[in-house]
Image (cartoon, rainbow, N blue to C red):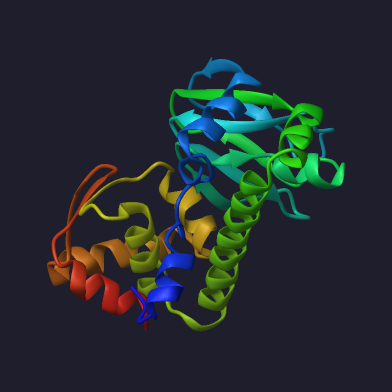
Length: 227
């Protein structure tokens, strides 16, 4: 997406990839050998904000919503993580409590790795440590970008940006969260999101049915997302 030199392209080849996808087969296999796998149904709380952390979670299938509570008790979605993503790694790194709540959005399979095993694995594998750092950097960049959007972009631009993010390389999006959750993820009201989606349909940029959205004019959506 950016005009980069060949060296920069090589350095940024994994930008946007989930943590597990960044690892080679040997490292991935070695990490998962340390894990205990479990399956969960939709709307299952994996851990709560403020809990003590004992394991790092790797999403093998499905999606997980990460949210935090505001002072007035409202939940704010800060990320939606799919297969290959790592969850709860901050508690392993700094020994602190969970910084957010993680909830399944659909049926998921999770690999649980005990903190001590995860830290030992990182200590003995510099490549994985580097990829974890890059994965965290990606997440910080995404959070920074959304903060800039909150201060400068209108509702339509924010909605376009989230649809582009959720679609990835596809032109089809199945919204993994409710419109209310989508709104909190973008720092908007539910009404503002409904209006933005309606505007996009009227412009012919999308078609939608329930939570399924087809991006008809991807170029127009990407352009509006950048404004």
